[in-house]
Image (cartoon, rainbow, N blue to C red):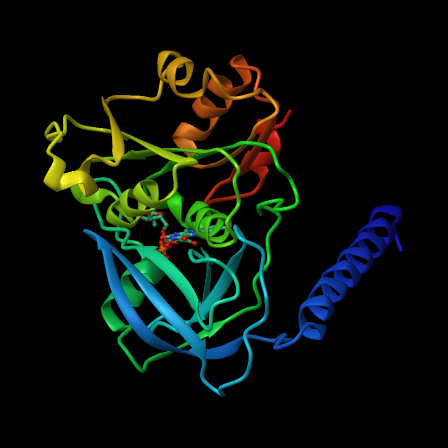
Length: 299
Ligand SMILES: Cc1cc2nc3c(=O)[nH]c(=O)nc-3n(C[C@H](O)[C@H](O)[C@H](O)COP(=O)(O)OP(=O)(O)OC[C@H]3O[C@@H](n4cnc5c(N)ncnc54)[C@H](O)[C@@H]3O)c2cc1C
């Protein structure tokens, strides 16, 4: 056997062992699954145009494996006419400890350059209450350290709010006094997942402030008392997140604050540079694409 073949076989053996150990870990916890498990859609909810939440429970009535706020689950789907099963990852978007998993999925539409996304469209077109979906045990390294007491900066672009919603709901549910600033970038007011929920949370929790930056000019929200729900988020206007935004929004936060960011790839590097320039060293990233990008960001 050639040297490289030997090396390859050894490395593959180590990796397979690590993967098996990780799955075994999931399997051993209460309700843990070894393989994909059928889950039933109990409820669906539109979060904004083209984004739906699906509440899922195990079809066999068993317990759900626990997860950390920020982790994701994979789903396997067999799309009629396609030769292979397809697997996609979706962050669990609600606080852990509920009787369901909530996935919040954006329909990836076709545009003049790219075709429609296969699985997100398939799920939007076929999932309805009572339908089943094969889900894998939650996993992922992007999750909240809820033993920390540092202030938090949560930064989300578009549907990237999903893992941060789980963190936020978890913290507020547990009565955490941590100072939280959430910076959400969305195309426009119609494309803001969880917009209403966030405004409600900001009204109820004085330690939470939310700021919204629009991609296109948005109507200015009226500061009307009766419409307090609408004004609970601080409208930053429109454009790209810039140094001057962070100067005002984060100036009073200690630099040891933990920053959790989930943006489209194109913005991730930009946000990283801004936060680094402001000396926020505790930066954690999730990207809805290949993990190598996150590794490159930390270099
Ligand atoms: C850890 C993690 C968590 C995630 N969490 C969420 C979440 O909470 N919510 C969510 O909505 N998504 C999430 N995602 C993204 C999700 O996994 C899918 O990638 C997304 O739903 C798109 O899948 P799809 O099958 O619809 O698109 P795909 O068919 O996989 O296509 C992906 C993109 O590529 C483009 N494309 C396809 N073919 C071509 C081609 N030939 N040329 C050019 N472009 C092409 C499509 O237009 C589409 O935009 C997460 C991803 C990761 C890794």
